[in-house]
Length: 488
Image 1 (cartoon, rainbow, N blue to C red):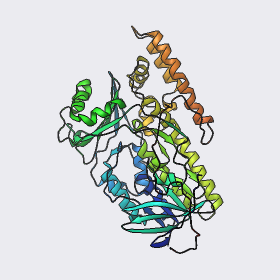
Image 2 (cartoon, rainbow, N blue to C red):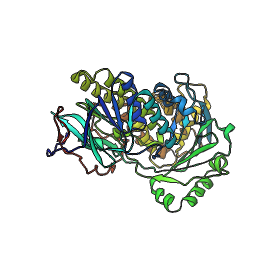
Image 3 (cartoon, rainbow, N blue to C red):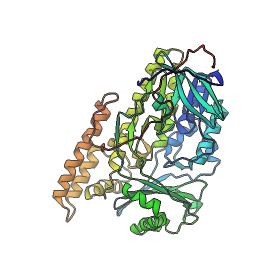
Image 4 (tube, one colour):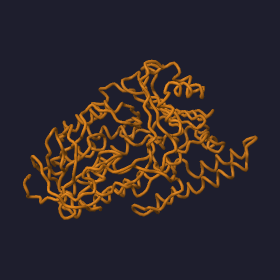
């Protein structure tokens, strides 16, 4: 961990908690609830006040919705009257099929709730559980003693305050100040995104009663999604296009919107008649990464520790699930520092095992290329055998690892079909196989044999990635204070 000079700490107040969590969105609230259920005092700090929006895919599949149930927030979210999507419909350049999602804890639907609505309900659910959530409180520094964090300094209004705690958790997103304070701002592995992300809300032409599926449309180099949203009758339309197109989405958004509708007949038929359109939001800052996410008395959860390309639609699921698991791990070991540190490290290891397949899948899908004959033939295998397991929707729903869905048998069957396709360029097909085979091998090698925090570059990872510069205030400095001291 990077250490800097020591300096005096001046605050207006000092208090005590068992755990301080910085960040009150999905990962932060999911971590907090198991802790207060175990009888611990938990303070969650967030620099914003809720409701507050944030850039997000918004999509939750059943495996994510079950996490809302487990944290006691599902009834609150359902009271917002969101559409419940029970199917995934694929439109892959002429290949079309629909699958019903596999249920989790009896939940067989996905939800797509705008983050300004969803995060407010999660904060309220956490408060109802006994979590002390403090809005408009920006964390500034971590307090250290003997190489362990022992508290957080934060600013509330014009005052600087300090909270001493046995564990500090950073759940403060991609630009995590806590990552900088813990000395792990720079990820140990990452991959540059090739796709950008542009979206808007609209009134769904299908109306509230016709919304029952997430629709994925792939045409040319663009992947588009239509996600029934909240309240019922609204929908989220997403374009995951070549990142080079994002400047055009910013400078001439309506023309770009129309060009995407004109480019694909199926997409145009689905949303061309939409009304009540919101402004378009767009970003091309989507590099994937893993940061070291645990250490003596601290952890990073959610996007603070790991981020994957949003093309997978799994960010919210992972933030909620691994937030809950982190809270459970801390709750059972907090009274024994040695066991606690081991549990934090094991939690990080398990998170990596659970997410690495989807990380590599996202890295592959973020390449802005048109679907090849081979890809279309592999996908058509799911359409031709609708009752066969595993199903394509299992990739998004995380029923099993991606490579168990797009498995060797599926790939071999697709290859045979591609070779038999009239007019196929067999030389190009062989070149594609030689390109894709290392990816298949690397994904399996990384998941099964890759060491903890391995820095070996995998073939799916694109160079040139960056998470930008670390926050300047307090980052990397060693601010120490004895646990028994008073505020000065």
